[in-house]
Image (cartoon, rainbow, N blue to C red; front, side, top):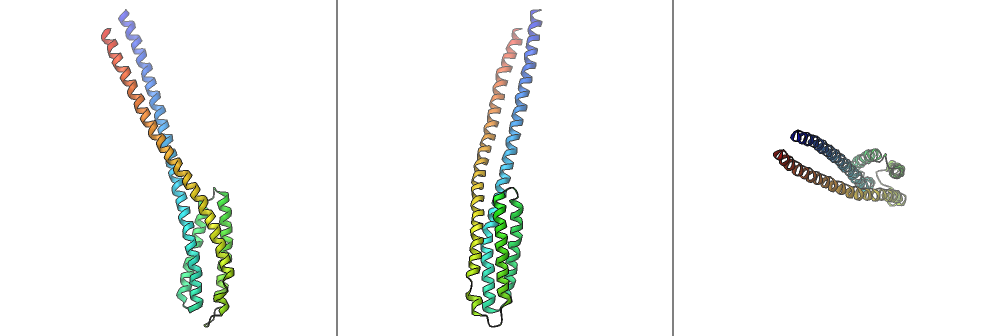
Length: 214
């Protein structure tokens, strides 16, 4: 009778242990999956920020290239310069559209991009108005009177730098977050392995000794 009661107690304790171990395993899996999801989301945000920075950094060179191409055309009359100008113009337009898509969740960046688009439209209109006045012998004022264009270009560059500054700040923040989440993921995994191992080591030897005694 005593032996039967002991076995019942041991069986009940074993069931409780299995429930506890299963609960720990479920909690560990949930924590690991949540951490993994957070790590992946943060990693995607970092890639997203890198793309914005890459596009914004390219824009300054493209705008400079447009101005250089137009000046080259005014000085030489070579239509190849106009082809290069149109190519750069198309790329900038595409990049502005892509940047607008990438920053839909950031009102301050959207506002800056609106300014860039307005200045870019003014910039291209001014360049093309000058090109329309070109004759086989370029007018001196077309080549030399570039103060207005330089001012517009400077405004585009200034706002573009503000876009880059904010994105670099976001990038640093997201990299730190990613490192923290990865560290937490590893710590959770190690803690789960240790706890599971300890529970198994504590439970099974004591269970075997109790049955032997019975």
